[in-house]
Length: 430
Ligand code: EPZ
Image (cartoon, rainbow, N blue to C red; front, side, top):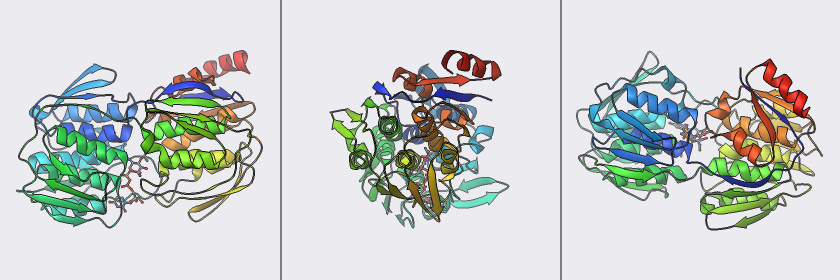
């Protein structure tokens, strides 16, 4: 099984360019099958979750033409199959977006229960509540979600919890239903806005995305469109924290500074210098970070997907930090891995008390999920000595060319596929 092997201690210095947003792209790819004309999607991130979604929509009959690594042309005209059988769709979370897309367009969908990172219970009741409100019959049988409706009608829907997935999913179905839908207590993440903009570019009538009330007037069909996906807020944040954790100096390019405000503010509080440009942010690390308190919240709060990265930085700060995870209940497993590197933390309920240490030391650890995996790589790059990280398939699901981007910043890191690769690394770098 592939592993990362790295020799820590080098501050990461230089420039890195951010790829398209994975979580926006997943919604956009699912929504693209709702048009019977050509839809051109640009700035697609080249990561495994995206490739799995492309395979799934190809399997149900969409015409999918990858024009280059980051550009795909999709036409949903040929879709014949409303039952999604792809084995991969049980592995990723975003498979649920095919429900909203197919229900909106054809009035029916049959999709396996979604997978994704094990970071909590992750119910989908709000998605189903929304589909039912639009007039769909919903049943869950043998691990599959079946939805069906003769006619979807707009409705006034109040979400009980703020959910990114439910907001996007119900917004997609409502965009092709009859009449007016109002989504209240909607999520406001940048990718909600991106998916709404994409739907509008195909002819949808959606207003208010990015606020907690989204108003949708259904249209009968979508048309051709060309759309470029926004930069990935979380990939950008991960590289910003890479500068803090390795005491480096990184210019993170091709991002939207507005999306990074909660992250920039925390880095400044921790003692880093953060310089903002039109579409870039430079983060200059400090010899010793200051402790801070962080609570994860829906956008514009501090993102849960940045919790392991800030937790890793706290573990190197001078003093005690308090970290509270308010979105997912099982997102602290990486702290156990960090403790093998010398970190000191205690978890009580959804709060972690992290006492910073002066340095980490290399260890054999494993990636627990996508974001935790990325944070542990940063820890390994800051640590004294050699670190190996297994289960890196989690990281490859969401970070494009992660090790290559890190190497360009001066990281000593290799992808090892076998014992021989590990030995070779040790001979050269060890
Ligand atoms: C999306 O997950 C992202 N995944 C996650 O990114 C991200 O962590 C999360 O949003 C929060 O920002 C994708 O976009 C594919 P939610 P999602 O519905 O949609 C509860 C990553 O690393 N809830 O906003 O599953 C839920 O349990 C991944 O890229 C319900 O109770 O998250 C959670 O506590 C990990 N009922 C909260 O809402 C529901 O029907 C927010 O979840 C839905 C959610």
